[in-house]
Amino acid sequence: MPLRLKAQEVVRRLVEAGHQALFAGGCVRDMVRGEAPEDYDIATDATPEQVQALFPRTVAVGARFGVIIVLMDNDQFEVATFRADAEYSDGRHPDAVRFSDAREDALRRDFTINGLFYNPMTDQVIDYVGGRQDIGAGIVRAVGDPEQRFAEDSLRMIRAVRFAARFGYRIDEGTQAAIRAHAADIQRVSAERIHDELVKILTGPNRGEGLELLRRTGLLAEILPEVAAMAGCQQPSQFHPEGDVFTHTRRALDALENPPVELAFGVLLHDVGKPPTQSESDRIRFSLHDKVGAEIGRQICERLRFPTLETEAIVALVLDHMKFIAVREMRQSTLKRFFRAPHYPMLLELHRVDCLASHGDLRNYEFCKERFAVLGQEQIHPPRLLGGDDLIDLGYAPGPIFSTILRRVEDAQLEGEISTREEAAALVRHEFPRLRDVRREV
Image (cartoon, rainbow, N blue to C red):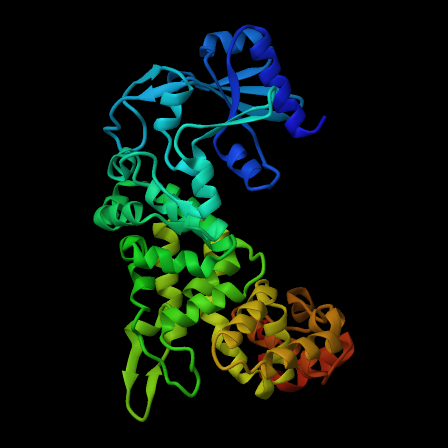
């Protein structure tokens, strides 16, 4: 059964039991916009206990706030009792809730575009907050007093940016003014919740505009001051005719297509080392900005509670993004090792958008694509010719020198100097003769 029909079945059971039940929030917004919702939330005048009594499989995830999860097959639906909220002393959850009706429930929601209801039994959109008008006008507007909405949950300020970027909307002037006035309050929000919103902005549509909105509202300086510092950081015009580092980063983000998290943040942070390394002599320079940026990137990822594997990938992208400058001069062994780096496909895409966002010269990008295709996996990842046990059999004592010997063997293999175990053994005996038979000499 399609997801929407299952959601309608939940509503039908509630209505047949004598309750009011409506689709609520984001799913209605998406329907009004002509999009298929990814999930359906339901609001009702039934109490949590009454909801649980009607459905055999439920989870009381937020019964205190009137929220019950109803399970149907492998799908789940959040069913929430109409409510009005008391104060939010912790800046996220209401201190208490009072069950109410649909109108009061709409008035406590964050933005008008998310304050709509829909009755699937009568095919009627119910709008108490002007949400349909704002969807038509392309506006993100807080419900009621924006300062009160943001005092209840400061994360809503970043959510306003996310919705504006996602839908290509503008933020209402009063709502935007309230964000600017209270941007510092975002510090009250946990790093994990900020991380989740930033991921949605930077992997979603119009991500460059999302970054600009974060800057314009003052939120960027609060959550990513290292990125905010890119604005006004000038670059040499012969390489970067587009302007400062921030403008370049915006353009690079917009050149991405459906990026994974690691790539999106790799692009965001690839030049984060430029502001602290900027100097000017014959021209503006950013010496070692890749290495400085990698360390800054690590600090940012740890601050925002990125998983370890994502952090390592993002840091590697920042650290290695300048290597493309030398790809045409690299030895074959160096180039092949570069190609087989775990993050290489994302690194290549970062280089592409880096070029498109500046000088537009894609020759090194095309060179890498061509060489990668010509070499193929067998040459980039050839089978290992010798290992530690082989060196012992050749008469070498285990120790740190093994890594040097095996590296030399691999270099020769990647350069095409050798291709068999016999040739590898002969190379070792020839180039490392004095290290053999150490055990017998002792």
